[in-house]
Amino acid sequence: MANYSFGLWFRAVRAFSFTASITPVLLGTALAFYQTGEINVIILVAAVFGGLILHAGTNLISDYFDYVKGVDKEGTFGGSRILVEKQMKPKHVLVGGLVLFSVATVIGLYLFIERGWPIIAFGLIGIAGGYLYTGEPLGYKYRALGEFLVFALMGPLMVWGGHFVQVGTLEWLPVLISIPVGILVAAILFANNLRDIEDDTAAGFNTQASLLGRKSARVLYGGMLFTAYAAVAALVILKQAPLLALLVLITIPAALKVNKIIQDSLKHERDHLAMVDVMTAQLHFQFGILLTAGFVLGYWFHL
Image (tube, rainbow, N blue to C red; front, top):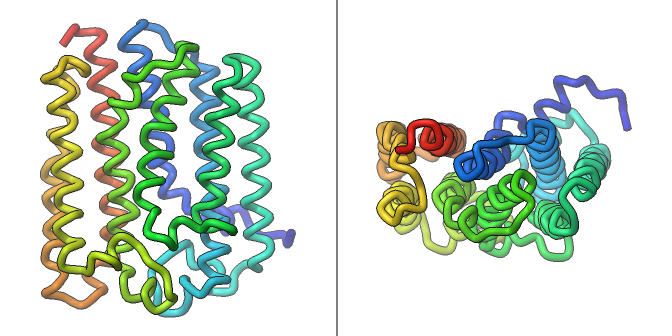
């Protein structure tokens, strides 16, 4: 590959988005701590870096296929824009993504040695899901399946995996706990697709937002945010999460702010939505960290 600078690669992997993969692993770890009072720090670091590197590789491969399929081009908002601006060659971005998948595999092998066969299942699902997001032969992002599978991969799968590598047993509770952050990570993609309805339609691809249309998509976005908070409340009421999980309510003003931008989008030009995906990602991170803190503090204060 060409001798590109670190800064260029940093931009290409869209490092600003890494909170979406770090947060669910931390949440799964916090649940394990809430149950046991213990954390294996080395395994935590390996799990976080494994998920982060897999995410980075997925971003590179997504940029590659979005570019070669004509989704990302001049005048669009999507991706890192490294390829649109001709700052890298497409083949180098693709190879970079595959290299990062290989690094994630090495980390997965370490976790397999430590925790056994379920790590193989987690890893294979994660790699396949990351590549097939835009890669052939599936490209599920282009078939209106992106939100469903991003929810599954960066919600239940990563929270479950983060919990499993700490406790060494497979339980169903991490899947339940993952639902709110899974909804919000899907909302990041949905906000991106809502903004890009015209671009995706012009490129001949379907997303949930493009199938619904801008008016109905706004309603679903608001519903996703509401459901995330309602899910946490339900977990607390059902005693599946500590009372301190309600710390997530602190983020309601941020949720209302980005939701207002979405709901007002019909009154404005498309540029009005330029930052809604970033704002939703920030909300996801704040919400996820507070939910994580709720479990850690719940162990200490028995609340």
